[in-house]
Image (cartoon, rainbow, N blue to C red; front, side, top):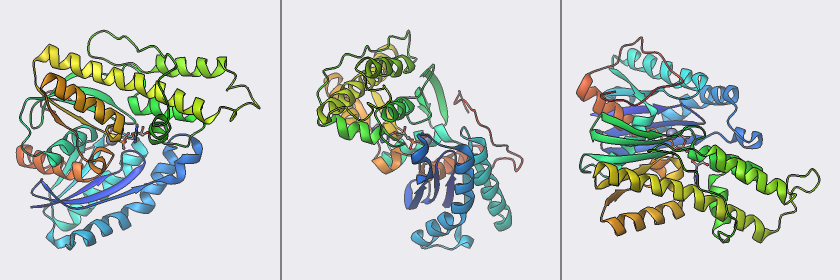
Length: 340
Ligand code: KG4
Ligand code: ZN
């Protein structure tokens, strides 16, 4: 069964063909570079770029998979959460395509899509497992009881983890999205600047205090004074990046470890754009080794936004629950709850 997946929830226009929910035949991602000079995603520009890119991206996904439209069996598209104007490009496109071809259509929650990146990486992962989704828009700890059955454990109370990386990168003068720049700088740095690790009760996260701590630190050393910007030496920039990254990763690893202790579940999976970070991956390996846990972190191309995860999730939901209503609306917000 061939599923076309479409993803337009933020600043990637993506399409993918996945066979039987497991084999990725093509995965095309057009990352929109237009936002980099603005220090964040500009919703209006994202919608316009999606409208321009969606047709060529879908065509390329079909070409690379070596199939024609008539060979498709199912169309799946992200319907929530995300930028409304961005979702309103991919979702109606997918519905119209499905309708024109007489195919079933399934709407997919983007967060559930990120969880399906884990199944694409390891189709035999045992349930239950704890999934940590760390992306530009989300930081969520979820207990995955079985496919499509979830229990939320914790969520960020303010900024998402990737957002904290991006805001820190902006303060340090890197372009958007800045997570990869911080990681690159951090490799040459030492964790010599003390940023306090946020202490939040339970399994929730908070990153805005850390962001403010960085802001005050930069102000106190005179880096934010107009005219002095850019005067940080290479080593100082690397040390600040390293110190900041280390605390962020500490938060993630400590909460994950706490979730393991509280639930007694021995399998963990980490996905979303921040899971590309090599230092985070190393720390997760270390955590898994020390506690004898089974760890699954998908390949980088599956961690960042892509449509293969949407196709895989759409396929599973179609098998379990049938097609979505043609009236399914896009929604900027959506929780992943039990049976959602
Ligand atoms: O999952 P994703 O592609 O899109 C969303 O659903 O948001 O995640 C993008 C986020 C951005 O905040 C980006 O800065 C972050 O992932 N990111 C990283 C790295 N690569 C991407 N953060 C830290 N280290 C990286 N190497
Ligand atoms: Zn995402």
